Length: 68
Image 1 (tube, one colour):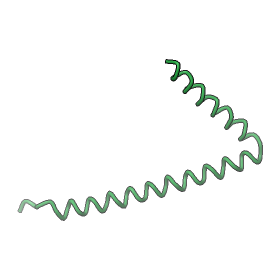
Image 2 (spheres, helix red, strand yellow; image 1 turned 90 degrees about the vertical axis):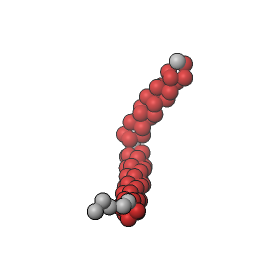
Image 3 (cartoon, helix red, strand yellow; image 1 turned 180 degrees about the vertical axis):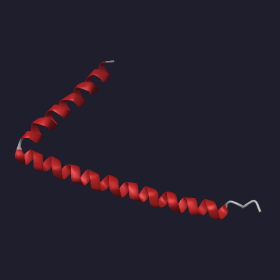
């Protein structure tokens, strides 16, 4: 239970700190840049996942016998 309290306090402290940093123009710029990098990373990961899923679907379709 004690670890859960520290975990929740850590998350709340992080949000408060991020809010305070976002108020400063330089901090806002840093957070905006960080958000753009995270968005780019998640977009690339999503694209790679969809490409791999399409390749695996093609392999499964080629291997699966058809009922004629």
